[in-house]
Image (cartoon, rainbow, N blue to C red; front, side, top):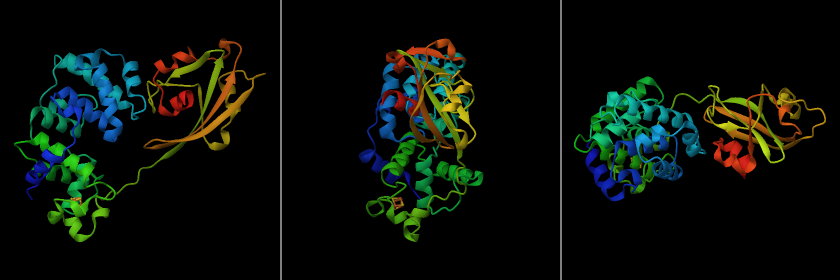
Length: 341
Ligand code: SF4
């Protein structure tokens, strides 16, 4: 099937006008591709603009400290992306003299850059015929060719990558990759694809066989675990205690309120703060409960408030910060919603 010609024709008229597509540089492609992973364009766009405004070069990105990166990343989720980018920016400065490597193989040595991002940078910034395979591409190809191989199996991934590599336009690999991703995001969408208006309808095997909604096929269900977090807003006058998460766990590097994690729902409760503080004479009030869903974890959280009369009563590695200065720290959305909404 010659996919390149109709797709590129469509892309030249209908492709999305996005800021990283103007005056293309590898830095812009890298920044945009990593921000847009697991993220809708409408949500990621302001983040790209903010990062590009504050850190316009790879050098500026490398020189920033991690707290600044996480602060800019706040609210976007999957924070390991921001931490990995910081490492990659320093790799580029130290190993590649401040210029992005140009080959797929070298690009993959950068922290946080896998097959997908390396192919995107190699094709869009350096015009190399490397096909990207993201969720959009899996969906479009599985429908056009009516492929029932699971996209989350190693055999399926290899099959789709080989097919995508065969289909790419060697003359315009960057535009072709962006065209197929735009087509997946705008026409061949997960729910309610625009089949009746689709210019590939005649070629589409899943459409002819009436199985569009069954493509792509996935074999595994994501296993989600439950965790129980009690957060305590511990304060004295204008000062409030916060702590940086440093363990290898969700939200590493971000700030939070004093936390007690318990094993199950029965253990939850205001009394848990006695693990952090002597509660004698203190009034602890529950503010609210909130369920927060991450990709592999369901967090059952409860927020409490407690005023203390001596900062020394809270033992551990906490910072005391003025309420008005809290916005200078990067918090996960769950905590910033509590603090600022
Ligand atoms: S006909 Fe429907 S399923 Fe097939 S490519 Fe077009 S939008 Fe996708």
